[in-house]
Every structure is written in structure tokens, then in C-alpha cells.
Image 1 (cartoon, one colour):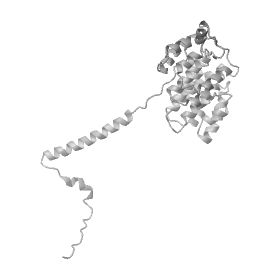
Image 2 (spheres, rainbow, N blue to C red; image 1 turned 180 degrees about the vertical axis):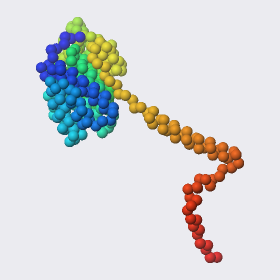
Image 3 (spheres, rainbow, N blue to C red; image 1 turned 90 degrees about the vertical axis):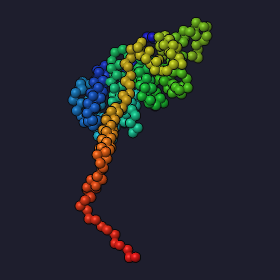
Amino acid sequence: MSNPEPASPNLLPRDEYVEQAHLYGLLRQRGQESMPIQELLDELRHEILITTKLPMAMDYLLTEVKHSGLLAPAMYKLRHYFTDFQTYLIRESEADTGRFMMSTALQILEADAKYRLDSVTPEGMFFFQFEALCRNRLSYDRGLAAMSNDPLYNDEWTKWILNLRAQVGLVDFADLIFLASEEYKRRMIEAGQSIEDKGPFLFGDKEGRIAFANRRKDPLFLFSAVQRHLGYPKVPRPIPADETSEIIPQLLRRVERVEARLKILDDERRGGMDITRFYEKNKDKPNFKLPELPE
């Protein structure tokens, strides 16, 4: 792998990411209790370290969410603190489609913040963010645009990620990684070919070899192999909906209908069925008869 670049001066201090990860984890855990987001923010702001800027950001989020009910617009206004990718995930979770859940977005953001604490690299962060888009079937165009503004990436990374929007889906993803790796550069030099118009070579030898070994395969195999070797956090997978809560009531209703049919069959076997009991509720109603017509 290529040597990690020094941390960008635009990255937040380490304490900020520690508290962000703590906040996202608390929001995800307590959000399972179906509490409104404004109540959660109001309650949790007292649990965040006041020596960081996160409590001030939470106060602004709380003010905005009380007016609009949404977090993403307020996060976008705080772009100097929240990354565009964080805002994009929250915006997708707040969309009316309901396909991408808030709990999944918070789980990704928690892993993202923890990864930035110590050993984060541009290569690992790219794979983590891109895999999050793939696994949750989010928009590549909007997602990659949000990724490109991450302060972790330098100008070369930003330009390459933006160009990737026009190539994803048309060119095999493993080929795209291989062509931007030091492994491809090494092979070109050994073959005596010019690399003047090639690159940029953003990924290391290891990533290039892994990508070459996974060409024409499911990209999930590539993500799994790179995750093992780069050590970036595992991307949370969407949790399938629990259908047991709907299946059990349906089974109970079917059992009731079967029992009613068996009761009717049992009454017939014993000598007939008294259908008057089905009209018991109408026994007190007056019996109106039509007048007889003259002959």
C-alpha cells in the first residue's frame, strides 16, 4: 500500500470525532424507542463533552429541526463541521421513499467517525464510503459528489472521484481500481510502455493486486478482500424487515376461520345446523310485511 498522506489541515481534531461517534451511537440506540429526533437531541446534548464544538452544532441542529423536522438542511449549513457525505446519508434516510433507514445511516456515520480517529487513509475511506453506497443502493452520482468534498482527499483524489461518476456502471469497478494503482504503473514500466497519460496512481500495490484478482467478479468480493487487508470498518448491511409481526396475526385469523368451519361441519354431522342463531341480532326488529296486491 502507498504511504499514508499526512492528515489534512481541514480535518477536525481527534476529540471531535470521538464525540461524534458517541453521539451517533446514542442516537441509534435510543432512536429504537421511537422518540422524536428533537427530544433526542435535547436530551443528549448534556451527555456530550462541552470542550468540543459538537454541543454548539447540536444546538443549531435542534433549532432547525424544530422548524423543519429535518436534520440534513441544518447539517449542510454546517459544512465546516459535518462532511457532505454525512449530510448526504442523513438526507437519504429522511427521504420519503423510506428505503434507507435512519438507523443504518447513523451506524455508518458512527463507523466513519471512529475510523477517522487514528489510522484512516484516503484509500480505506474511499472503499468504505463507496461500499456504503453500493450495499444500500444509493445514488452513485450524488454520493460520489458528496464524497469528493471530504477534507481527507487532496485535489487528485477529488478530481478522480468526480470523474468516476461517468464510469461506474460502464467499466468494471475492479478495472477502475487497478488502472489507478501502483501495481498497474509498475507493470507498464516493466513492459516498457509510457505512463505519461496514465494515472493518477492513487492506490498502492496491494490494492492493485486485489483488484486485478477480482476482475469480472461480483464487486462485493472485492470489497470483502480489500476490507480484510486495509482494515477499514465493515460497512453495516441493511437489516431485512421483520415480517413475523405480520405473519403471526395472519396465522391467528386463518386458525379462527378454520375453527369456525369445523364447528359448522360438526353441527351438521350431529343432525343439522340451526341457522336462526346467525340472525339473533335481528330478533327484536319489527317484521314489516308488504301489503297484498288486489287481484
